[in-house]
Length: 425
Image (cartoon, rainbow, N blue to C red; front, side, top):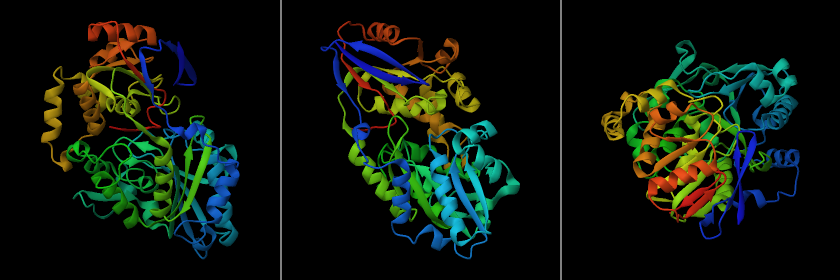
């Protein structure tokens, strides 16, 4: 027997597998990596030796209006350790600068004060100017040109008016942008809804280059790069986290070069070989990334990359916030034939993209490849309406998988954290 642990919300669920059924456990080596420095030292060292850029203190000289783009509540970025040294360095040369922390919500709901305190700490929330981006607030959007894809690029007015635009964030494998971090702070982070929709069009989502861990030729990434350059993103502090959400690496400096260094570091640890199996058990890495079904599509794509055609993906996601998107749910629940929904999406031009279409499209792609059994706190009927099979334990899910496959002797590949690996086929 072999015991595997799977993160689920704030908990850990364990399961004992027979040696003969467990084909492989796909894990990045990120959790074995020893940075040999504290999180504070890693951030300090990165900011002290910026990549492709002058120090932040130099960039901040004589600047009056500085905007720091920061991640929102859906990302486990340890902002309380990143923002203070950024503020300290800014104010070492520009003590009177007007500094705004702009929360990059993209098209997510607004971050609450409680969530801000959890991310930044009480002192920063009470003493710094924090603005939560709203992608639908037309009065706060400015058009800065056309994306390479042809969509209008609208960004938050505060970022446009800044005489120094910088960001913090973290880098992880991303299921269609290749990697998070860097340029993604701007698009989708602080863009208008129409801009995000154009970038997330069905044509780009269907592109084989728009996959986890790939930037080369990725049209979604190329749009994001253009937006960050055009917006004037000058400097970033990006970190890499292990499964305990601890900082193990930091890169600071030019928004392209520092991000590239981070993605190369991450790729060296996260790439794993696919082991095709009848059943793949995966997760979204626990809280905060498994707060809803919407975000959990990411972990499913790791399973998609290694489950046999017609096999079963068992997805563990607490989903305490429920579905995570009304449009997302309706697009799935309103049509029994998933093929019809996919055809509808693929028929739309990029400027006809509707909210949440991209996430639905990827889930449909997964469902057209394999069955999905969803272990969560979401109501069973809602899970069924989304064309998935509800379950409430790994044992129950495995029993259902065996019934679907029509056999008791199955092979299983386990992916304890589906958002931390790049599964290479």
